[in-house]
Length: 236
Figure (cartoon, rainbow, N blue to C red):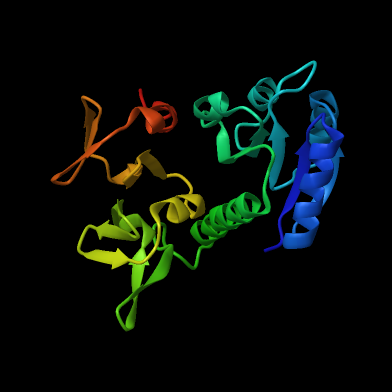
């Protein structure tokens, strides 16, 4: 998929590694490498990449501070050595959150998530498609079943399998929940070691539980901050 991006990071070694990963594994156009937030702001005034790789810990302005100054529709993939900023990162248009050092396996998972995100955006913006008609196929026995993303209520992990529950059916998929999580973007959010939910399907949230149709799903402490950061954007 042809996308454009920039790297914003004050560590030359981190920039070099990310550049190599991009050039060797994608068709993306790397428009610029910025080594501090001020340089990035100057570049972004004149250019509009599809998304930016943004380090958090930088001098002068941190990545979080820079994100707060950018256009609200700026798509971001945060890169950092610290996990404690994950929840805060999702108050922005965050596609993914990469912990350093970035491995090839994790980069490839992020690449799939990024391209899925933009592929979904293009489909929904295409007047030939109605909103909510984004779909994929799932192998079930000897057949492939078409699943609309908008119809999915939640994914439930069951050891080496995942139960995919929609508004009309359930399918058992031979995949790990972790692998599915790495390929999904909001409105899908991991809320528990065993659950990924579609936030558009929520009925209510009460006492650390989510209610979707007749299903009660627990919210674990591990994923609570990230989940609530997404929900906070919809609270009036």
